[in-house]
Length: 288
Length: 234
Ligand SMILES: Nc1ncnc2c1ncn2[C@@H]1O[C@H](COP(=O)(O)OP(=O)(O)OP(=O)(O)O)[C@@H](O)[C@H]1O
Ligand SMILES: [Mg+2]
Image 1: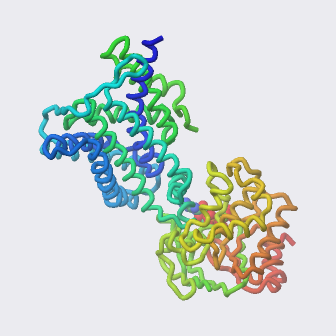
Image 2: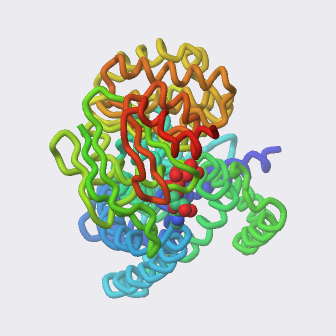
Image 3: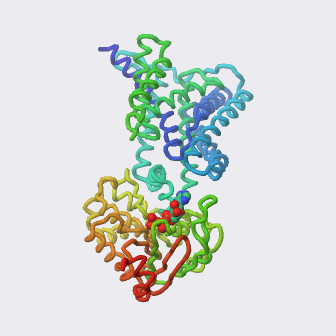
């Protein structure tokens, strides 16, 4: 029973991170219709920037959240306003845009990765921060991982309220359902799409900050997190933000159960779930 | 109020509208009639900015609006109630109405406007919390019209509001359109019920194969042999 609790809590801790990563990707795909292969690179940028801020400038990773989040937002917003906007006007229809934008995000992934290699080199970076442990139900957990979970849940809840209650949040949902009709209501659609892409990038950037507190970082760390994001996004239902939130926790718990028996098999288990999912229920938990 | 001159619109290489010209004056109901595929919806989409004309100009209250984005055109006071309702199906009735009031000018007054719309469509008030996709067809059309009014438009362009409705509801739709005019809203109406449309409208334009074939006051059109044969089945 105690073991069970350990595994469940470890799963929640991991799941919070996955949920955050996947929500960002889901927002970018669900509304802006960009299946962003470069999503992992925004995570990497968040993590590596946090490492630099902490080890070089002695700025706390918690402060890095409010630096990296907005920076990633601005970067994402600008990339959408320039590259994806241009691509949209060149694409004959949404279908063409979706495939073109995915290819373009592939290119973006390599560009960001190469710049990161130039800036940070290939070394694996780690730092020690908030190393205290907290005991929950007898098991010990790193305080930094609880902070991560707290951030993931807070961002999930705030974002949900933002979508449900605010004027811009409603415009985002409307644009996700029918961009052309949202335009007829007076929504500046190109602006909303860029906003969503930027918010997705900000979530990735913040996830990167949180990841760097618990895990080693390097310029090519993005790949692994991209894979997790894709699996969770499909698991939750393509483009469904609540689905991604729930799916993230679900995958985290599965990951933690698998690690309990065989630590090296995490990723293999994720791929297996992914394949089974595609065969059995390709629209995911919340998809229609 | 609205002046459309020499509008031509293409889908890719295919031309659908040819040199369309017409005017709407303040406070009138102008009907646009034509067979399926004549280009009526294309014309409305060109006015509301969803499509860009390849040539010609559109002027609204003295300002050129061709080439503006749809959101800029709504802000000037044109509300387009699209064909097929186009509701936000996963949002509630209330949220759909709020989206109608998205522009700054309307957002400030959304509560008052909402009350007015609920007076017009008491059904919507009862169902305010329900998801749009669970409404009946008639209720959905009421919602589409209510949503279109939430932006406090000067000109409403309405594409086939009675499509798919039972005769009794069709009557209701025409009543609503008349009362909108009484509230000072100018209306451009597309309808398949040609006889009833010609009865409520002041003037009508007939679109045939993307060209303006006839234009005139409704009484004259009701007497025209061509209209009687082609559109009234007489
Ligand atoms: N997105 C599109 N791409 C290409 N052609 C289109 C598109 N939309 C409409 N058309 C074509 O343009 C022509 C006019 O269509 P439109 O929808 O404007 O007709 P309509 O008069 O509104 O017809 P209906 O009474 O059936 O609604 C038709 O021949 C149609 O096939
Ligand atoms: Mg039509």
